[in-house]
Length: 218
Image 1 (cartoon, one colour):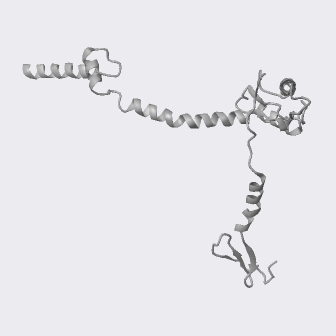
Image 2: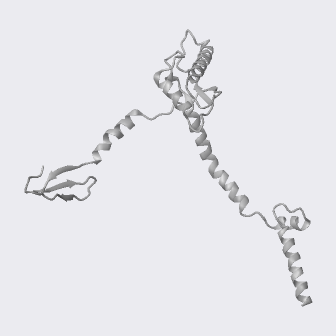
Image 3: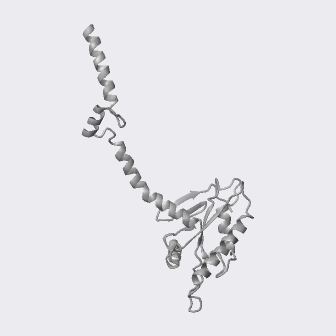
């Protein structure tokens, strides 16, 4: 019996010592163990792999969000700080974001002021001045949009490439989308209507019973 008790005590002490050899163990035994193996395998490597995989997608999400928050030059009348109807709609959509709008808004640099021989020496100042005026115009308009709580918008200027796709590709895809569909509706005898399915499917025949009283079907 005494031997059994001693064996149980030794097992308990051994288990306690092994449990203390963890990622944060400061004992000499723990240091020796960590020099031989990684006690945090595979969690630490899974975490590093997860971060390396998600980081590019996180950057893409951020870039897309910045572009969505950008008021491009085509939302203003060329060379002015007057918002177009599309510009006011854009600001409305930003202000209506739920659960709350992002207070950081971006303006595309006023590249619609073209460089000429007459303004080449001061075009940078002209663009900066127009950027400031456009920021004020945005602030004034957003102050009129109803919100649940006041929002202090911050406006920044940057010069991203205007996102888009060649109109020829989009219009061609739209026009050609109808070429893959076909269908018809034809009668196939008294009280029967035949419908030809689109996409090469089989026809479905729907038989209608004649009305009571010997009348004719419409």
